[in-house]
Amino acid sequence: MNIAEARLASPKVQSTIATAQNLTAGYPGKVVWKDANFTIEEGEFVAIIGPNGAGKTTLFRILLGLQRPLNGSINLFGTEPKRGSSRIGYVPQQHVIDDESHIESFELVRLGFSGKQWGFSLFSKDDTNAALAALEGVGGTELAHRPLAELSGGELQRIFLAEALVSNPELLLLDEPLSNLDMKRERDLLSLVNNVVRTRKVAALLIAHNINPLLPYLDKVIYIANGKVASGKPEEVFTSESLSTLYDTDVEVLHDSKGNLAIVGIEGHHGDVE
Amino acid sequence: MAFSPNLIADLQQIWYYQFMQNAYEAGTLVAIIGGVVGYFVVLRRSTFVAHAFSEIGFAGAAGAILLGIPAIAGMILGSTVGGTGIALLSRRSSHRDVYIGIVLAFALGLGLLFINLYPGGYATEAISILFGEILGVRRSDVLLTLVLSVLILFGVGIVYRPLLFSSLDEPVAEAKGLPTLFLGIVFLFLVALSVSISIQVTGVLLIFSLMVTPAATAQHLASKPRNVIIISVAISLAATWTGLFVAFYTPYPVSFFITAIVFGLYILVRVLHRKIKAPGEQRRGWKERMQTFVRDYSP
Image (cartoon, rainbow over all chains, first blue to last red; front, top):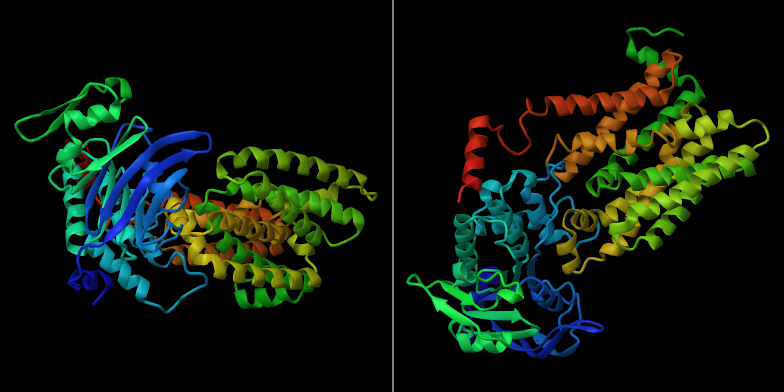
């Protein structure tokens, strides 16, 4: 029984992965956002939404231990975030794929498992097995031996997801995985992430611009805009009142017949949210 | 001495000469190191760094000759000092090229001064540093090359997976807690040492022929890093051995043959690449490529 199965089998109640209290983020002399209060529970699918430059990636950097909060507290797995936690799987927004190198997907996923180990290991098969299992988990078995440079955007995102999942994390941080995907691929990837969240009980934080494709899957939304942070269930956050408070201006949330949302009144905030 | 179709007899004849034995031994070591370290140079797109180190090594070598100490000692000193300087100046990679260019220009000027100060006329010394003089490698140089090669391979062995990971996917490697900055510095030192010993064979100006071209060629022939390194070493070994062999029977320089062989192989591989089965998958026909294209770019 691997860690993920053990986690599923354990009967204990849902436990909290992260708690932020009055968390303030930024750089010395510049506050990006302040007074964030939220919790992330085990196995939750959370979207982080907000305009460009609002500080969504900053939240990831704090959780990854790459940046210290300016103020307030953040508790992750019962302690302060530390860089290099193997309990976090991370897919950054920017991946540089060298199209001159023909490195295959499998090798990248395998490095996600063993890339931290110093020295040579000629005989261990652990990393190979872990990489194959991770690829299978994202439906990427047939991509294993394809060069990264030849994969499409959607295929690459699946490989990066496998690279993040290979160490069996409890928290997944996905930075704009949908940014270069067409609508069909967007749906495919989201249903894959949702699948991973539900079957492995891993919590996922996904940064996105557009909330609508995510709505069917989400447990929670963290909305960062205007230097402030709102969080809660999507139907709590996406109300005219809540967003008006966030943006300090009159904002209206409209619903269409298919359940899609549109936010009106934030044009001045470079809002990409449709 | 004439070439005969009996290769074994030829090699016996070649190795009869101590200087050819030295050349083969040093050449073999340098080819292995160039193939291995060159892979990371290509993977990290650090060819300019390798070039800079070799020119800084030029200043070191010229200074060493002036002082009457072995050129290779001067190269090692020069390129490690230069490596530290570059590492300190460019802590993040974004402006590294600019700093390297600045250090490189000064080093070349310094080298020129040292060569000028050399009393016995400088043309031959300069040429042998710039273009390599493998036939002038001495026994003690071979031993030093052996020691350094073992050291470099040992170093690569220790940092292999973290260096590979941080070269391929730096943001994730950093988030996973790998010391990416430290790994970058270790890499610079490995390159500095490798360049120092490679200069004996290829010279300052032809350093890419062993540090870049074989790895760049091998990249197109394999999709697993280990296999790329093996092929890259095989290419540099083949080029060095063949180059020495041909040069022995002709009046032309070894370095030329080495560069010509690796260049020819690179072109051959690039041209034939579409004909050879692409690594990791069956070659796809244009119809299938079109279908993938349409599938990926249609809404």
